[in-house]
Image 1 (cartoon, each protein chain N blue to C red):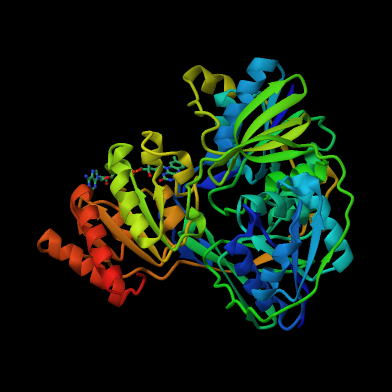
Image 2: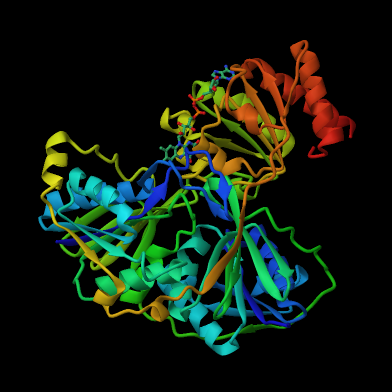
Length: 325
Length: 257
Ligand SMILES: Cc1cc2nc3c(=O)[nH]c(=O)nc-3n(C[C@H](O)[C@H](O)[C@H](O)COP(=O)(O)OP(=O)(O)OC[C@H]3O[C@@H](n4cnc5c(N)ncnc54)[C@H](O)[C@@H]3O)c2cc1C
């Protein structure tokens, strides 16, 4: 059944986030030959439309307004509801990011629809669109379908592969004017603490440190390794609580949920709340001096040893490999 | 100030998860207040103590949630309400729960509603914002700080590690993120007092709702455990050789570098 699916793109620092391209790929699957309409909100976002289309959207609708410069649930929900009203889509998909988590439930409530959040896969099975999502902190999975109303889902970053970019693809980018009424929330200040460089939730390689890193300086060798691999540095709550690093690096149930290709856990014991944030990583490496540490139970490869010895050796070895590659 | 807390009784995820009859096996498992809702209860108590007023903790669930509601009363909440859906709702979803909560809250003149930002079992994080939308009040999710001055409110919201300082006003719904506060443990006198505090029980009927009004919009068709990971390979030998082997495995076998 062909369906029209809206995909709300997420703009960060002037560019579309990768998860928005993944959402287009998910929407293509859900559309089953129907139209995938990209939607962009901001002060000036129409220039991003072309790339959205190159990643698979058939056309793009923009709403540009000064009040949409920063995300607020009031501003974005007015804009999105206006677009939904105009387009009457059969489905809506966007990223399960801070923005997506905040906005989607409100839109679902307004549309009196269901919402399947934090989706890691979708598949057509027997005439139904079946969504897979982790539950119980990743210890189990459930498959869900929508039984009534619009098909609405948010997808977890790094799980659904984006389509190949097609530089030749073009499509219509058109502006819709929506009167954005007063916002009941005013953002006074944004304190940026998240890592410079690679975005943790979308990184392909993450080198994470725990309490075993022992100090702020102890993170230096981890940073070097991450640099060599083009990855990002993450942390356990143990390391954040001990002030070795900022909470913006925290991975786990309360921190970020990540699914990189490679996760290197250094001096992390592997508490269930930490595993909740990283156990779905494709390959997990554990470096820990305690052979009984729980992290070895989820690791694909482990080295029992002192991270301050192992990590610099690893950095050197990767350097060699990548120089020769 | 009239404060409501939305609370869920959850399976402790520290527990081992097994499946029987297509469902998560709950026999003998430990149940707790959803940890994020504990932050919400603590915050509500602190706001009440600073501004006067009353804290009511509400839960949609079964009779078994009484235990967690009593714990909330023992922490210091004033009243508890259980909306018992055992007889009426077989399989609800977030549409169901939020509709019930909003119906309950709509005539309560709540100044402040606090929930956890996500429940650690289902992990959907929808109920807070849905309830706010149904009540037509503003909401802010994943907050780590809450300052109230009259009806003006300043909150700090965690946005993937960055912080936003947001100004808004009451009435308001917020959802708690870790870092908001340190939830207290119930004290012995607290536990004694809790026994005498009101814990009301309602059913859908009492809210003028019937099953059809709250029928789920989504359905779970399967629950399964992730394929058991084969035991990982813990390397041995000289450290330098282990490192070489690891790099080679990541490059040639796992092909991630
Ligand atoms: C509601 C709730 C939410 C939570 N959310 C999160 C979350 O989102 N993320 C999270 O991470 N935690 C979370 N936690 C905390 C979690 O339970 C653990 O306390 C935390 O993950 C432990 O951090 P750690 O592994 O760094 O520290 P520890 O458990 O202390 O482990 C340190 C490890 O380092 C090893 N080590 C020490 N020195 C060295 C060395 N030189 N070389 C190699 N190894 C070494 C030790 O053998 C040990 O295994 C949460 C807890 C609760 C209750």
